[in-house]
Length: 291
Length: 174
Image 1 (cartoon, helix red, strand yellow):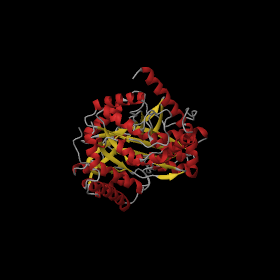
Image 2 (cartoon, each protein chain N blue to C red):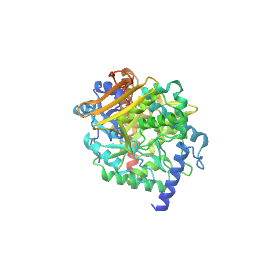
Image 3 (cartoon, rainbow over the protein chains, first blue to last red):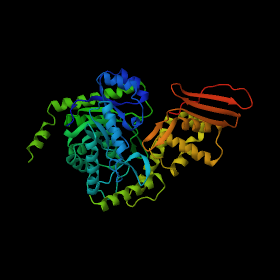
């Protein structure tokens, strides 16, 4: 299983943030957009310097289309495996989504129909990819504005079944949990409590904004208060190995960026402190007593 | 899973993608307003990604960029490989088909073609020796771009009918 049990605080490494990231001394890991490196001839020096300092580098794929009914492109899997070796990654991650179908690209992560057939296909694809990767694979829950008609189960049941049938870990994006609860309904804490939280590899935290009655997951706006609170509730219920900030556009100044990273670290600490004080001990004990 | 189940899923996914990016009909049972909001968000995402990745192209297009790009993107899905710069190159090609492009737009396309090769995995930076020529019309000039081993790119602008005079290359496209 996943050996690097403590990733700690992290951030999505982006060129415009490189200097601020380099100056931040408490980072345990950075995530890189794997697909941007598939055809690159070198790894940027700034990343090599971080690696030299002991900061883990986690390649995060966006275009594998793991839930796609078309066959997985073996070149993408090979590239991801190669990149994992190049940066000595402790794990790699991808999404529970599909990106293309019928010969058309969307450049985006599309939701999967939550049916038993879809689960069978997804599990087969994940196992095939896991067999080719030198490190564990963590998979991320996505945010979506639309759900398929004819879903046979809720998202928590879908994720749990996928985790039961594969070796995969969960990359839990709590902003996506928050966004889906707002846009599609449901209680985000109840959702978290239904998941096998011991399978969480790390957590994504990001911001978005509301427009036209919908919450848009932009990674370009401040993290809402509710998302920090959700992170605290999560860390109160499970030992989470790491959490990171995802910021992809409208890059803030260094002070604002640091304040968001501090906010993530503090929310984790608050949750961990509540957990250490035994707030959710009865949950854990009750779970163990189940047959 | 059975082949029939896989084929059914493939058909359903293709229907959703066509509706989202290729003006296909709304698939049965989806929330119409939400689906359209989703389709619009995909176009916005492409437009913003291109503005970020290729600012000199956006300057060439000028103020009409948002509406012009939206017209293009609504009818043209991302090129294979889903690269933002390749999307920009297709956008330039679409614009050129509408009417004669400005020299500035032609220079952007020329610089892209000099440097990048679109592939199914995204863009691949071209290497090795190459020479490309472009004749500008507005101020008659011959642009000579060369990629030389060890020396990288060299650009030369030759005013037509006058003596050669070297100047710099335009801003890097990515």
